[in-house]
Each structure stands twice: as structure tokens, then as C-alpha cells.
Amino acid sequence: MNFITMTLNTITTELSEGILTVTINRPDKLNALNMAVFAELNLVMDEVDSNAAIQSVIITGAGPKAFVAGADISEFSQFSKEEAMKLSKEGQDTFFRIEQSAKPVIACVNGFALGGGCELAMSCHFRIASENAKFGQPEVNLGLIPGYGGTQRLTQLIGKGRAMELLMSAVMIDAATALQYGLVNYVVPAEELMAKGVSILTVINSKAPLAVAGCIRSANAVFDETKDGYAVEVSEFGNCFATADMKEGTAAFLEKRKASFTGK
Image (cartoon, rainbow, N blue to C red; front, side):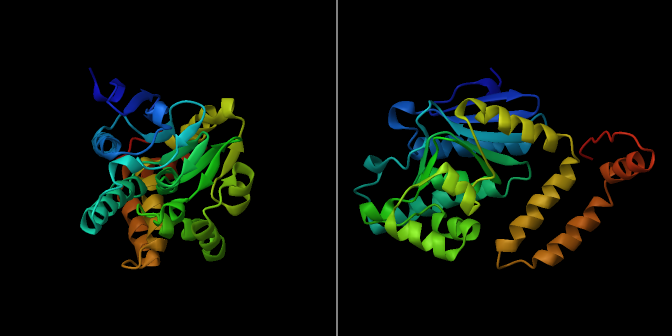
């Protein structure tokens, strides 16, 4: 069976019209993240990177209650300091792969996105929420802090003051507040959530793939202290001029027709 349609132990995948839907599938655990989920997310990202049939990705959670309600605490509650740091680094590396994917990855957040679930959603390029979605970083209730990039991405996305409050208070915010804060792009009824994600990605998939990838790399460079974002933009802009898609796009514009991009 083809990987993109097979069921893994903790994740299901389905490819349709170039959009790979990745569903965290542990509804009895509110889709809590464990080591198996991280391992399978890495397998999925391997497939996203290598499979030309995949143009973009939606990440969501199984069932109506939760996107991902957090990490599987029972798996690491007895970890040593060194084991905890290794867990944190491996989780960050997985989410960094999602954030740096050259193909668009969006989160369709249904229900609770707490702790590691909020961190997973924030690693995606942007987020759409159902009206019943809830976001939060409740780690301080456990004597912990977010370990999968949450302290960094939450601050980037909603600003230092609001991030500090949510991180230190462990207060959950609803979908409307998340929209107001800029944490999500849209809030829609639950029954419209996936359709909204598909409609946005259908538009993006019609654009030049190499240019879309260049947008992702350039925007990500804003938050990478090792890079000059403007220099990255200059490089990516120049790279576009060496592509067949740029020649097709400009010719189509001048000829007043729809462009046909090939990703070359």
C-alpha cells in the first residue's frame, strides 16, 4: 500500500488533489503526543519532502474534541534532566522540520490545542481554528515550561506581553481571542474547518511551487538570528529568475492568460 494512503500506528494520511491530510490519531488520549507520534511525524515529513505528488499539507487531530491536547505526560514524568533535554531537542527538531518545509503546512485546529499541541500548531505556517478551539501552554501547572519551541513561537506570533501572560498563567484562550491575538488566520464552524483549509491550499497549490518555497524561506528568515532576512530575499528573488516557472508566469501575465506552473 502506498505510504500516503496507509494507516500508521498513531497517524493517518490521505492525499487528494495534491493536499496531504495528516491526522494525529489517538482520540482516546485526546491525540496526546508521544514518542511514536514524533517518529511518525518525521516519517511523514520525509514523504512530504520527497514525494512530488504532495504539494501542501494539512495537520489536524482525530475526533471533535482535540487537535492535540498536549504531550503524553506518563511517558516522561520520571525522566532525568539529561533525558528531558534530549526529549525537548528532538521535539524541537521535528517541529523545526515542519516550520522549514518548502511545501505549505497549515494546522486545522479542532478543539483543544494545548501544550505540545499548541506548539505543533504554531510550527505550521499558519493556523485555522474551529469555533470550539482552545489554545494554551499549561506547562507551569506541572512545574515545567514548553519544551518544543513554544516559548519562542508564541512570542513571535502574538508578542512578548501576551505570550508572557499565557506562559506564566497557563490560561487557555478561545478561538475568538486567538484570532484577535493573531495566533490564527480564521475561525470557522467545526463542520467547515477542513473545507476552509482545502480551499486556501487549493489557491496556493495553483501558484509557482518554487516561488512559494522562496516565500516560506524568506519569511522564516525574519526570526533566524543567523540570517539576514533581506539578503535571503535577494537570493530567493534571484533564484526565481533561473526558473521556467518565472518565465511562464511573466509570459502568461503579458499574454493575459492563466499560467501553467511545473515547479521547474
